[in-house]
Structures are given as C-alpha cells and as structure tokens.
Length: 120
Image (cartoon, rainbow, N blue to C red; front, top):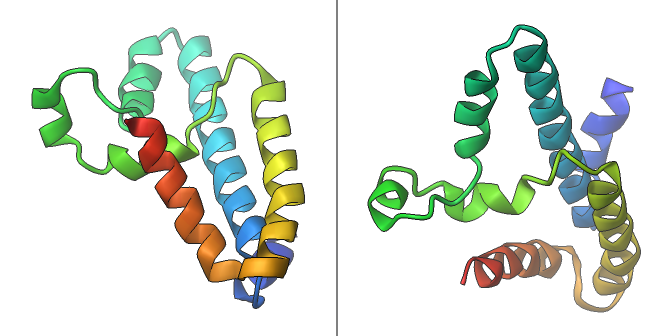
C-alpha cells in the first residue's frame, strides 16, 4: 500500500490524488494524536499540536506561526468523519474535471489560493 502512495505522487497530472493523500494523512495523524492524548488524559498535547495547524485569532500569535497560512487548508474537523469524506470526494470529482481542462499544476495553485481566500 505504501508503494501505491509513492506511485501516486510520482504520476503526471495527479494533483487531486496528491492533495487527497496529504489531507487524509494529516487527518489521520491528528486523529491518532487526539485518541492517544484523550486516553492518556493529556488533552493539552492534542490542543498544542492541533493549534499548530490552525490560524490563531490574534495577529501577535500569527506572527509567530506564519505556516498556518497554508497548514489550516489541510486540517479538517475531527468531530465529524463526513466533513473530510465529502471534502475529499468533491476534490476528487471536481479535481478530475479541473485537471482535464486546465491541468494538474493549476489545481494545486487553485487549492492554495482557495485556502488563502478562505483565510480572509
């Protein structure tokens, strides 16, 4: 299975699959951290890690974490599995159409620009 993931990143015109894999890996990573921190009763560990992906509400905090401009576009709600499921389904379906007409490189750019627009 790991080889299939590696092959997905090396294929040409495959940006939608690459974005889906990145989103799902980050979701699973955060979910595993959440489960272990909840079981061990260290919810503050999960909150500290999860906050590294989210845009801070105060500008002073944002200056210390500028990577959140992009990372929040890959962090999804852990409270509802349907959130990431439907986001990734729509990314797959519309990503295929987008790539067919405009190309794989533009899909990655539109994803990042969409995340930045969502920031505003």
